[in-house]
Length: 576
Image 1: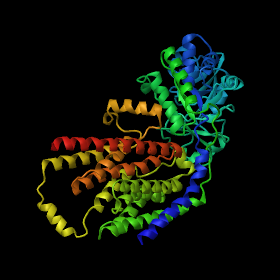
Image 2: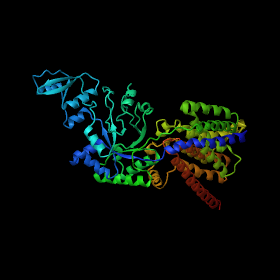
Image 3: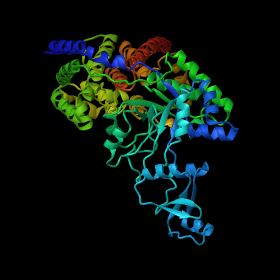
Image 4: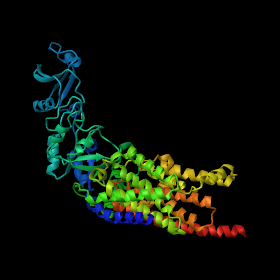
């Protein structure tokens, strides 16, 4: 039965491969557009005495072809001198004989601008003549109400060929049946933590945006975005907060943007200048150069959409066969209960996406059940089973929403914890009663306890450092520098995979006691789980994930073989 199940897994993997092709065609890096924050440009223009367009032309020479224009608030227009704004108390001081309503607020300025603003607000208002001017009166403070865009600036920028990102912001008193963004906008980047119309007006907003693509900002989830993404095209955007950028050198900042474009599928790179013009010039020059070296073209981003292949459902057969292999490979009576428990875990954590999670938990452990394989053949079997699980995971989990990051993989921690637990479980003897008695009466040695604690620490560290947002205190400075170096010369492998592959030759080629060999193989299983974990980052192109895993295998295996040689020499020296 085992041979039939292995053949089923192999055939399912081969037949599932075509399901990866649509995604691979859509996820090539670039083209990307460099977008400069419009408020930063306006501040620089005022500070240096130049116009907005003059500053943007200088940035264009450094590769910046895009600019983000914010929707202005009433306060913005007041600060720019286009509007005059008073509360009832201050206006009464200027016009003591005027009929002014206590507690109201009054605006005056160009009538076209006032009428456009009123159309955006869902509040009572009235026009009154005070002195020689017509004032707009409102019962609430409209200081930070939406007040439209600088339409003249948008037209000028578009005439110059710039890529324009509109940045509207939501407000509880705004209306949505008016023009929401300038007609010149190429993409919409919502400001704040909510998209426009999050409260019951998403359909109106989707219609009002007139098919413009919307930007998914990494690290800034916005309520209502997933609903708009069902009908509007999406572009991935990467930016760095000003307070974080101030702590980085221009070269370090450029590296992060290049990595985002090359390895994480970002198409919009949202930039902010440094305080010193020289730093900004160095940052942009380095960024443009390194993007070219990485083969990421500059240009207007296109939609990364694809239709998942029907071949993807063949992967379900392979996952079921792998689960049965696990059930019959574990010592009785654990096999069937563990398999059922894994299915329930997957359904509880991932619900409709349970199959990819099941593949990520099961397949990293299957190779370790092939106990008849000698030496590194056991490790090779574990790698091949893990890569087979990768095919099933990617075939079923690759959708336009998951590749964009809108529907991420669920159960990341389980992919790192469950495989080593399954491998540890597989080492239990069939006749477990004598084994339990032996363990109960076993006299532990301090060395054995130390090794066990080190192993537990490694597993815990792998779980704590999962993903891209591990706490900085967990990652030492020397490792950060090593990561940066490897990132510059190759697709950087994950350190937990390097460690696991290096440990495999040490565990399998040296004469350890059985319990210690098994303990080392449990740690190797953490790296196998990490292979599936790597490919569960759906927003990373498959080719990048493949080379990340391959580099980890090659570097780890080489390090492990060197380690075996060193340990053998040390053992010979010690015995002499």
